[in-house]
Image (cartoon, rainbow, N blue to C red; front, side):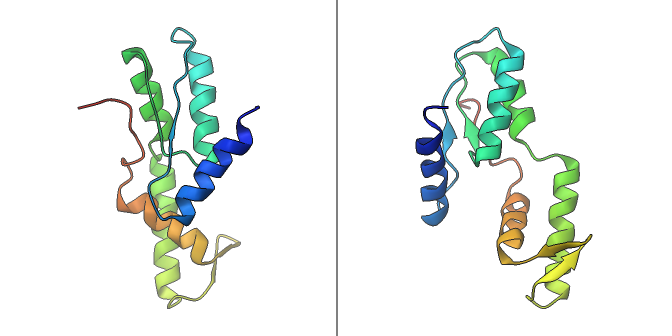
Length: 122
């Protein structure tokens, strides 16, 4: 919690600079799967695009937590499609406003849905 401001600044600065989302630090409790899942979910919610692992047992949870779900990919396709049909204007989709920031988020997800996962050195 003490580093929340600094971590948020990393995410905001990377977005402004139009560079890849930052990589979250390690979860040192290698035997605590629930803690790792919480840490990955929080990192993703903050806008981190990857997470460092210090043990091979962490890889699957990090990949699972940072890889977009099929539902998220479907959402992104629907958003981009609706925006394109609206010729670049804001549009309503499923009762929600779809404007340029939402479309950019959807396009980033579709550009490389697995790019956010940095869990091992291959």
